[in-house]
Image (cartoon, rainbow, N blue to C red; front, side, top):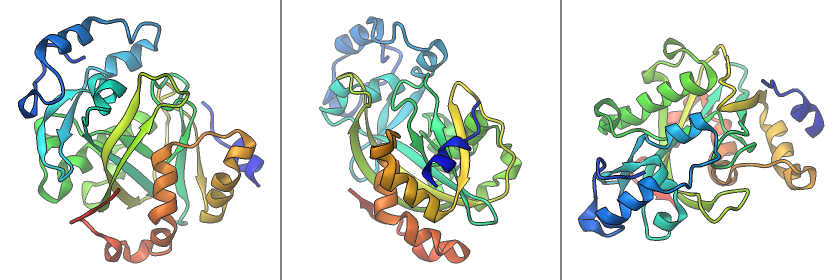
Length: 264
C-alpha cells in the first residue's frame, strides 16, 4: 500500500531596513547588517533565496505580535536558539470524499526539502491584510495566497469563510538534512478546509501531491522510516496529536476548535 501511495504522487536578511524588536533581546543592528551581507544563501535556489527576504511576524509565547524580521532571519538556528519565534500556519485541505491533500516539498526548498507534509505550510507576512488578527483572518488570507502560489488553487475555490481555525501548536525543529544553519520555531495555526479544488503545482515549491485516506496516511507515517520517506516534523506532530480524531468529525469540525490555548 505504501509503495502504491508513493508511486502515484503527481510529479511534477535582516538588514537595517527591517525592524529590531523587543528591546534588542535577540540581536543588534550591527549584527543584523552583517547577517544581511553574508553568503549563507550562496549556492541555494535563486527563487527560494529571494523568498527569504519576505517579512514574517514575530510573536511571543502568548502569540502577541512583537515585531517582524525577514524569513531568513527567522529561520537561522542562531536566532531560533535565542528564542526568536514567528507566526505560521498549516493547512489541511480535504476533498468531499474525505481524503486529505498532501504534498512532497520540492528539492529546491531551503528547509525540509523532499519531505512529505500536509497540504500547505507557510507564514502570514508583515503586510496589512495578513496582520489582521480578527478571527484569524490575516492567517486565512495568507493560507489562500500560498495555496495559489504552491498548488495553483484559485482563491475562489477556497473561500476565506470556509477555513476553520482550530488551534495552535508551538514547535521547534532543526532542518533536515541537518546543516547547523536552518530550523523552525513557530506558533503554528492549524486550518482545516473541505473543498474540491483544481491543482496545478508550482514545481519550485512542490515535487508531488496526492489525496490519501486516513488509513493510507497512517500507513505512510508508520512505515516512513523503514521506507526512507521523509516527513516534516510539524506534520508528524499534528498527526500524532490531533489529526485523526478531527478527520472523523469533518462534518462538524467547529466542535473541535480550541482557539484560546496552544499545544507545545
